[in-house]
Image 1 (cartoon, one colour):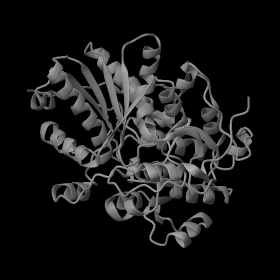
Image 2: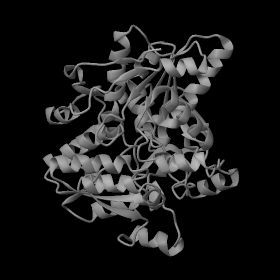
Image 3: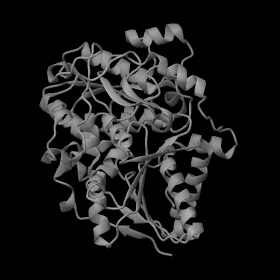
Image 4: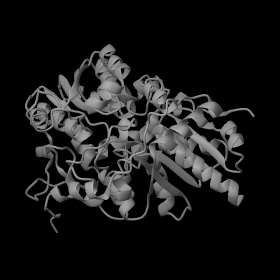
Length: 453
C-alpha cells in the first residue's frame, strides 16, 4: 500500500493567524491579579512586548503574519499531511487515518511556529534577552533556534527530570547558543525556595515558569517567552490547522474526529481551532484532546482560577487545573507534565465544544512503536498520546464497520527520546494513575477569587 503525502506550495503558507476568540460562543474569562482585579496591558508589559500583549487581548478574527516570520516559516512550512495507509492496513480498520507531521521543523516539533513569532516581536521591541522554561525540550530547542535567528540571548530553565532524561535536547539548545539551567535552580528566589523545601525535587513546568518569569521581570533588557497556554501562543500555532484544512480539501476529505496531545494546549489549539467554526455552524466533527493519565488536567482537574506557575508570579487564569503546587510524576512525555491548561481550551472544553480523554503511559509507547513500524516515523512521546487515541478509535471502527475519517497531529519526532523507548523495551516504564487524595490536596491551595461582574 503506497503512502499518500499531501503537500501545499510555499505560496500557500497562511498569511494570517486565526483567532478563535472572535468566534467563541462566550467571551473568554478575563485574567486576574491576585486581588481579583483585572490584569491590564500595562501589567503584562513587564515581561511581554506590546505586539504580543495586543495579540493576547485581541478579539480580531484574522491577525497578519509578518513577512519576516513567514520567510523563516518557509524553512519547513507548509508541513506535509499524510494518509496512513500502512497503519490502516495493520489495524484492519475501515477508517481513514491522516496525520499532520510537524516534526519537519529544524527543532523537530510544532513549537517553532510560535517561537519564531515571539522572537521577532521581542527583537522589534528592542529586547536583548529572553528567558523561558521547557519540559521535554521541544520548546527550549525552538526558542533557542528562533533566538539565534534574531540575535537574541536565550536562557532556558529546563525541568530537572527532563534535563537528566534528555541530554541531547540540551545539546540542541546549546548548539543554537542558548544557556540551559536545570530547574529548580539556585539562580532565583523561587528556585531556592523549592530547593530548600525539596532538595531532591525533579522540578515541574510550573517551577520552571516561575524562575523564567522572575528573571524576566527583574531585568529591563529581558522578556519572557512561553511555549504554550497563553492565547497568543495558540494563535501562532493555528498555521497547523489552517494548512491541514487546505490539504484535506485537495483530496476531497474532511475529518469526523481530530485528536491532539494536550499539555498546555498549543497543539490542541493549533490544529482544532480552525475547525471550531465548522462545528459551531453545525458540522458533525468531534475534537478530542488527549492527555496522560498521570497528569489528567482536563479529565480530572478543577475548573477555577489558578496561577500558571508554582510561585504565583503569573496572572490568574480560569482553567482546568490540578493546583499550581501540583508535582507531576517523572513520566517520559515531558511536554505534557503541566498542572494547568490553556484558558481558551479549558473554556471550550467546559462548554462542550472540545472533548478530552486520558491514556496510560505504557499504552502510548505501544502505539508509538506500532506507528513507527507501519509509517516509518518514530514519534515523540507526547505525540504517542494522540496516536494511542486514534488507534483506539480506528479499532472501534473495525468492530462497528464505520468508515470514519480520523486526523491527528504528529507534533514531533522522537529522535532525542530514544532513552524513553529503551525504558519501554526493557520493561522499566510504569503506568501511574494520579491518586484522588493527591488531586484533592493539590486543589486546597487554589486562589479564592472570582471574576468581576
